[in-house]
Length: 83
Image 1: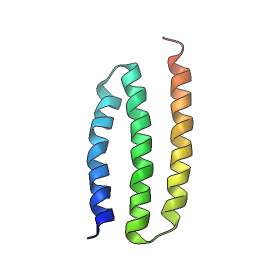
Image 2: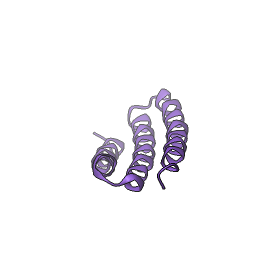
Image 3: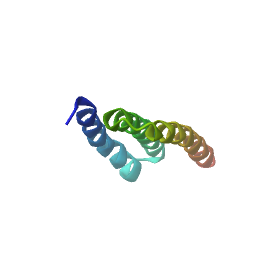
Image 4: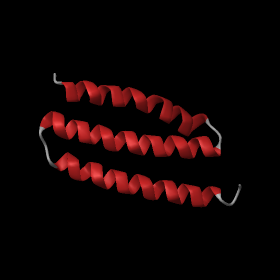
């Protein structure tokens, strides 16, 4: 086990509070949890790419970052109706 896998494990543990915020918080807390989960997922995939020396995870991390940003914008637009 190398340091990148340990870091990936730490990032997985950091996803728990983001998931709790997404499922149990108010509307703005859910948006913050969604954005945090997107950032953590991208970082997790980058750490796994370095740990396993696989370049495909870098492409997946980039796509995940772009989709998470777009998803946050869509969710914010959806929340605009009630705020």
